[in-house]
Every structure is written in structure tokens, then in C-alpha cells.
Image (cartoon, rainbow, N blue to C red; front, side):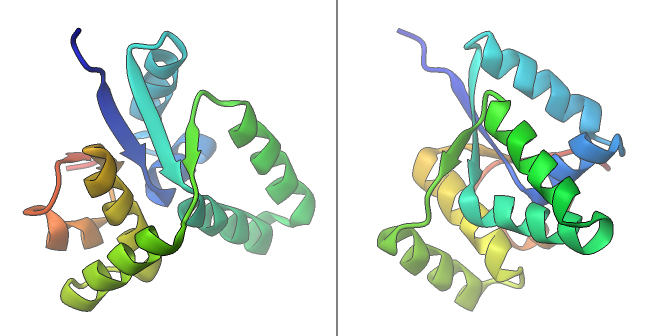
Length: 137
């Protein structure tokens, strides 16, 4: 049996999809592939929280609640941040120049052998740890 490629979207990728920015169409393609069971698509719950606080800050609580409802309807597996993942993220954050939330995305991708889909340049600091698909060049 051939294993499916696993992709992990970070907050940058989800925001690009939600706002129609550069790279959003690639994220939309991944949702379609995930729906058709051609790949697995993951997101760490910490990164979802990041999208929600940014949305609420910029557009209000109602819009953030709408975004949450939309995300929960997508073919996307949300990964909880349990103790082991917190420790892995802390270790990554200690050694690399990226945000703590991005360290959760990295730790999840490493654990799940997933390709991180992002346009966030902070992930350049961990290119040697996991595969990255860049949404923008």
C-alpha cells in the first residue's frame, strides 16, 4: 500500500486561503485532495489559535467564530498540543529563530513526517529538520 503524502498547514497558509492572498489557491487544492483522500492535511491547534486571534483582532469576534466554523467543516485534522508536543516545540524554539507557535507547526510536521506548507520566512531556520513547500518564492 502506498502511503499518502501528509501536509501540515501553518497559520500563514490558512490565512492565505481565507483572505485569497498569494498561495491561497494551493491551500484550496490541498483541501480538495484531502477531501478526495489523496493526502492527509493537518494543522496544529496552536496555529489555529493564532489564526483566530488575528481574525478577532482585525475583524471582530463574530468573524473569528465564523472562521472557526469554516475550519471545522474543512477536511483538516487538528492536532492537539499534548505534553510531548509541547516539549518538542520548546526544544525547537530554543535552537531555532522562529516563533513559539511556528515551533508547534514544526514539531507536528516532524512527528507526522509531514511537509509544512507555508510562506512564512521564519521556517527557513528549520529547513534541515523537515520538508517545506513554499507558497511564495
